[in-house]
Image (cartoon, rainbow, N blue to C red; front, side, top):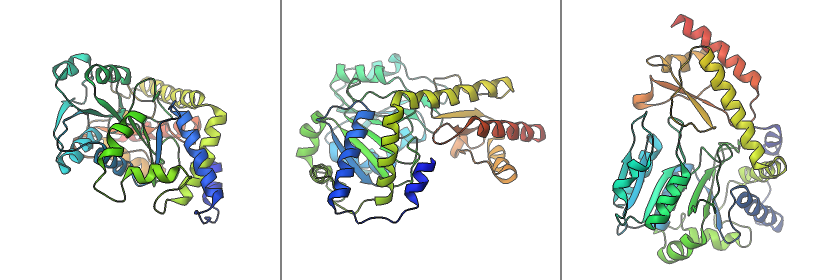
Length: 344
């Protein structure tokens, strides 16, 4: 987390049903939409919930059992979209990708003109760092008349996102990734088309996740229910910083950290996947010692990276490039990884 964020987080929380809080929330909406190149007619929802809750809320508000969706499943988070569809009885087809497999036109070809209603994708599959070609997916959706639903929880701030240019209909972001804020706020940008054709007519079947309530309340800079006030204050400060820095510059800084770290990894004989990677994280292949590397980094050096579960638990660790990190942090990590590798 950035020093400015920590300073905001240390303060007493204000009462939020005030004009001052409303003004801040209206500015949050403008700043966020600018950061993703969304048109002014797009809707922005500030949901006090996790990223997974936002994924589920989008599906609840936009689709029913009469629809059929196409899901890109390249890992744990692609699978999560499928689990949400299963819970809500929404039929779907999957484009399944193995760990080393790329998402290509050939993978999409069997689903041309199959009468799907929407495509669900994690812009980068956060369980393994794989980055998908959003332009290719956008063109596929335009050709086939699909709503494009994008989970950008891991990619926002790190990878290029053009909400309007890529024809995205719903974009999901979470506060604890590149924004480097406290967890608890999910932000969803909704296209005018999706809102008018689906959300405003359908209803969510749930009070708390009914997007029409959030859109109506946001007109006056409020949420229908008590929000995570502290995280929204942090968000306001961070969005203003990002506006000053420039989104492109922020992405470049994250990209530079990622590329430099990967270069040094390879020089030291570590292995990373050959598929396109998000700037947000670097997966390091350490089969079968990934879990041991994670545990020893934490216990012996006080360094916390991201482990994996399931079949990837012993295969990879993930090193993040988001937030208030400096190259000195990576030098410490690289030295620790080399020392541990020598003793494995």
